[in-house]
Amino acid sequence: MITYRKAKPADIPTLIELRLGYMHETHEDLEQSVFDEIADKSKGYFQEHLNRDCVVYLAEEDGRAAGCVFFLLINKPASPLFITGKTGTLMNVYTLPEFRRRGVGETLVNMAIEDGKAWDLSYIELRATKCGYPLYKKLKFIEDKSIYMSMKLSFTEE
Image (cartoon, rainbow, N blue to C red; front, side, top):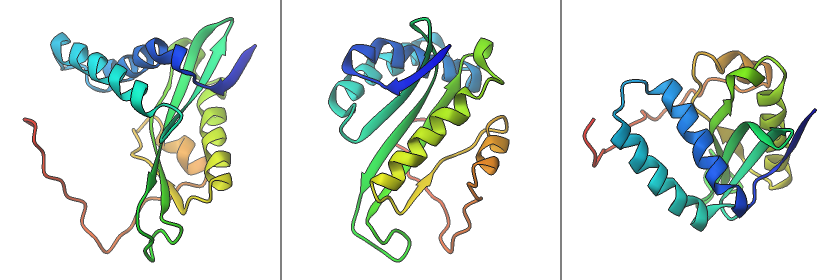
């Protein structure tokens, strides 16, 4: 039986393992040194942010991680696009291959959605993979149409 809960600080090694599992599937071409650096930086991130402005939902079966969802909470000045000033970003929505097609991802995302409503977020956003897109559509996520153009300035090599 799969159980669901919010992660605790003792879960940080598991969260890092799940993050790296997701990245190995989505970034197959990266060198091991990049994954090592991500693991190192993730530990510090979770120590500082877990259950503050980052909530992680975990699925487990017999004490073994089955999947996760990272939910970043953002506070900013209110605007017409986010009237409460509070938004959320889902990332690292990941289910281990042997647990897929059992509703794990859907249950975890729904947990985040329910918390997002309770926290009075204006919206929850995410960047969907092709694999995850049908689930998000089912859960009523819509493609973001904006008068603004998405841009970034990168301080790392692309």
